[in-house]
Image 1 (cartoon, rainbow, N blue to C red):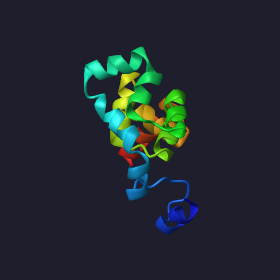
Image 2 (image 1 turned 90 degrees about the horizontal axis):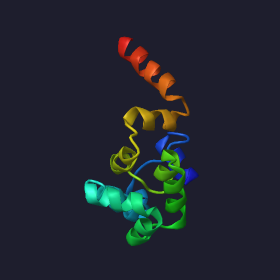
Image 3 (image 1 turned 120 degrees about the horizontal axis):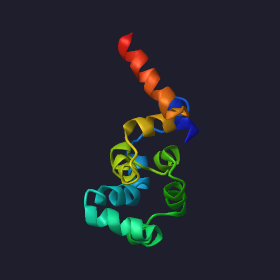
Length: 118
């Protein structure tokens, strides 16, 4: 993966390319299913069974359990589908952005406001 990062010139960033799309297919399919309230409720009742239903691998399962967006992206997650997962827990795009940057939500919001004024 390191060579791919150098190729794109974005150190520390996971690029969602064809290989990542294939790697994350089951994870993204599961997250897409959260468009349905019934599916969100089923996931909340038994996360492990729901992950099994979609065939998630060990890395993806651990990332889901830890609610860690960066691990989910590294496991092949597409941020647009992961937003559906985050929504189950009342997280919004700013919560996800804060996690991605390693900042608190308040600091991330302040950074966005400052950027908007500049």
